[in-house]
Image (cartoon, rainbow, N blue to C red):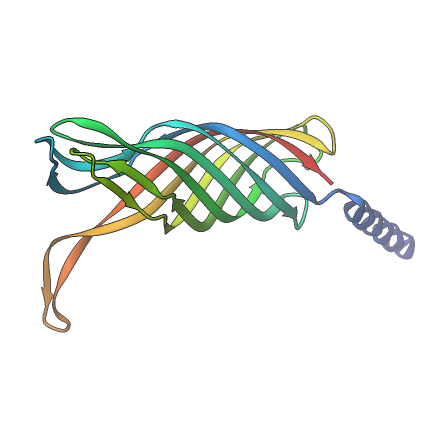
Length: 222
């Protein structure tokens, strides 16, 4: 009896392993959504038009991109994600003005975990990733017709999110979620800190530019 029970359990494990081996593990998702974005503040700058500016921000706008992931088991996924926000930079202070068009690109490796039964039609998920945010080159015209430009710049960033995955079939599904991407930009000196062991050093206040995304996507598994 024990021998039959053991053989039955081994057969179930083997059948389950065979089923997982035949399940599509690679998933491509086309993404589209809307981004709420903010920038950073800096030292006041008096422009030729008499206005003083001390902050630069990207405008809220649409976003699009894709993710390509590999399921290491029915609930865990690792992959790469690219997103682009085509938008405008504005400067503000005593007044505000458009500075330039800009593309903001996010490049992140990520890990995701899906909750619930792998065969369920709807599964909640959480995800997190590490990578970089790239701010594209910009150019603008100052008062008096002087042309100015700034080259593209990439900064370290993380990305975090969650939402729902809706499976229409084993190969096609939809994603609905939110995502937050804080990008380190700079640190401002806020004072001095002294201790008897390490001496005195400047203490900085880190500034991050944030992107809050409402994301939808169509997924294909193969």
